[in-house]
Length: 583
Image (cartoon, helix red, strand yellow):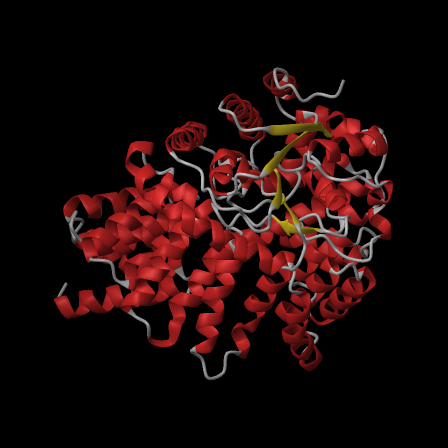
């Protein structure tokens, strides 16, 4: 085949692939491969088309193309796309990294790498790549916006907001990008600023699903649940198949119409729908069936949602990360300056262990404010924990005096004039001692709850990819063991961590609440135990649930689903050594 005809076929095949017509692209290239099975470029595109069409031989063709021309970045890029589609995210990241290394780091190779990192829960690393690209290509600020999206994905809302605002400042007409800014403002509890963006957008177009979602979210976080329902119902009238609207509606309103349930049940099975949308909708639908008592159907959907997770838990890597944090703690000198806010309380129990409720109770006092799950120090410490302490400690030591006032200013933006702040970031268990090096007066509270209940509650809720263990019951059990071990090792290293048992507090909120407040040096009042009467929201990912009255009596969800859980007894045995079962 002549070179012009060959090149035209390859170009046409790539166009078909971009249009989602992988089968036609493969059929178009078949004669070219039959004529020359050693044509590396044709093999790479053909292999990508075959894999996208669901044929297992596509991966072998992609690998053969790389073996024929190992220094061609495009072939590694194609290989990465195929691996990404298969859910093999670590391998895809390795392929994209190799493509970027060979190509020299242009947007063509760095953008797929950054997106794969972001999708795998490494939003901070993705943000660093977007930062690099912005420095190289500052026109328009596109990469600043992408940086904001990446930081948003890992909960670094303040830095995400700064990136998005910098992008907006560069635009003549940034209206289309204001929605992400509003979302970040909601997460940062700056509701008035968020409303100033959302209200005019919603008034102009109440049926726009993205705008309606943010308007509904704002209403939800502010405790305006009737408004939340009305906004979602109105938007669903013109967007009945919108997965995001359905997810929000089903999650928050258990008396949903059968028609919405039917549509949602159909959508979660559609592979054409983006994975994250199918996953979110599956969780919402599963929790709805759980509420209705249809346990078998609920469990199938919980499993379906978790099986779609793009990330996996690496226990050895997480253990190494903590070992390095502990080694850093031993090598660092504490900052001697007084912190502002002076009184800082960090709730560091695992997710779903009652931390949101305790945060709500602690922040009921007039002089206390919630920081939600801020986690602003995590990127700095996690970056240092990528290396042995001997290498990273000197640089980190010089950074500590700068981090203290900077972190304090960030807290003060949220806390206003409050003298006490309460943070509830579970990942702070990794860095409790390091936080104390920056803020020596910091106090810690570890919430314990029956580990079986924590495990199942994590599994049945939709967590960001930063919680890499959340989609697998065995991984959750491993993490809970690691988390408890981190608490004990911090205590052994000299960090004072107060312990509270969720079930004990739930049975006797007044007595146990007073004991917890005393441990933390706070003054207790029994009116703190009436969150349903509070006239303000406490910023947390469980914002609606903590408005409900405190219930006495344990809810044993694990027992409810035990007959549906494969290997339930083995999981119980695995968790049995943890010192967190109720007495």
